[in-house]
Image 1 (cartoon, rainbow, N blue to C red):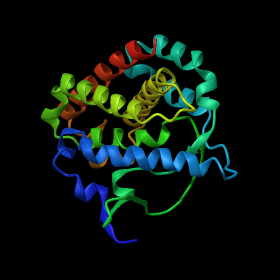
Image 2 (image 1 turned 90 degrees about the vertical axis):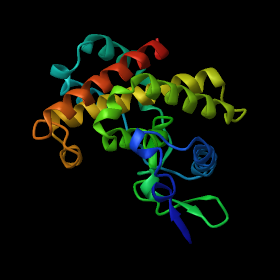
Image 3 (image 1 turned 180 degrees about the vertical axis):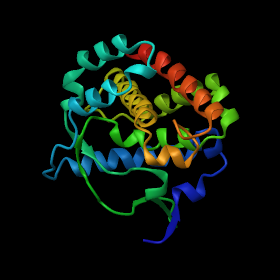
Image 4 (image 1 turned 135 degrees about the horizontal axis):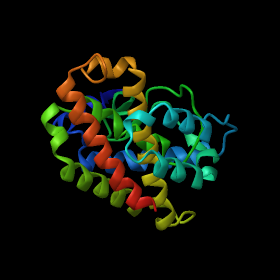
Length: 225
């Protein structure tokens, strides 16, 4: 398969933690196509609520509204345990924009069943780690981007889903990704150390990063509840 990595094609918005919205339309089309194809194959369940709970427990000291988040995770227990086709990883550095302007997968590594929208998280959260420190102050800009992302997703919903259902799934996915990002700080995960975040990273950058995540999480909870 000949083409460029999506991460190499879309570089201008990456420093702001975002993605070109026209390119996003192609990626959403590929996402739905993968959902359709994946349903025809027998796949292993790769994700359950226990992973969310484990990550959340380890972030208790970093979250001001821990009890509210824990309650929300438990409220939607069935969502985390439901299986939809997913790829690891459906990320810009693992996807190709082909010469005929289509999205191609580099591999099918670790394909399995996970909650709906798991793949979409790979188009969002990795860029939040790569952002310039000053971009963490642009919270309203990021919230607007997430809302636009959600609206584009809703415009592509097939007839076997409802827009209301998919919108809630989208924000549940964002919540799980944010919990995972707090966990990475608490766990001092290797990839965040590379970007000067966490206990061994730059203190100012880490403080801004955590405030950024907390602000997004508050917005997300209002969208879900």
